Image 1 (cartoon, rainbow over the protein chains, first blue to last red):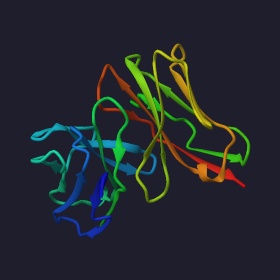
Image 2: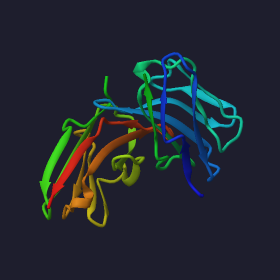
Image 3: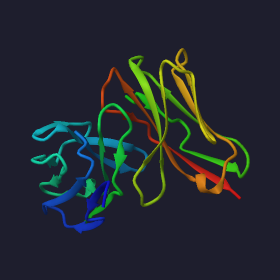
Image 4: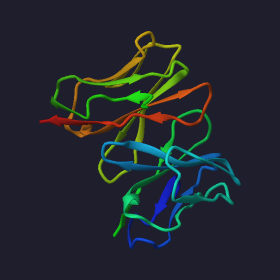
Length: 111
Length: 112
């Protein structure tokens, strides 16, 4: 399917476990982003990437790791999940200076 | 400190009336502004944008107004429809940056 996809859509994990959220886009957009959405905070940028092998921290990067070995994939890893990382996570991409295209989101619950 | 502020967490409007969603920004370097719409259990989708060289941009029922001197923009929806019920995010970018700064969103409810 064309567009931007995220998997899994829902995930429940335990505190201390490692979990990886996947993001895949088919447009060959250069720029990709990870956001988390929490009540009262809107969309907060976790990490972003300008191209394969180029990543940088956003507003709330602590506890997260990203990689981008291929243009189309941008996985987000929680190395040791904490309850404060319970959130809805959105991946997005853009080709340049225009609007972003968002994935459907992953709802993560850390117990 | 928030650079993009949506001071109304929620707005309730009657079907057929006008909905006005407001957004204020503090960074004078912002020169491109976007509105996104988000339904529950879905990702945000782009709605409309405006460059700082304009003060108005219209797309069907949606119009965005920009007041640069006041550092304020607003989204007008006329007429409002129940399907417009969603969370609306304002976002701003500066100087060719590809990274927008988002507001916290306004939840719009349009009553039939």
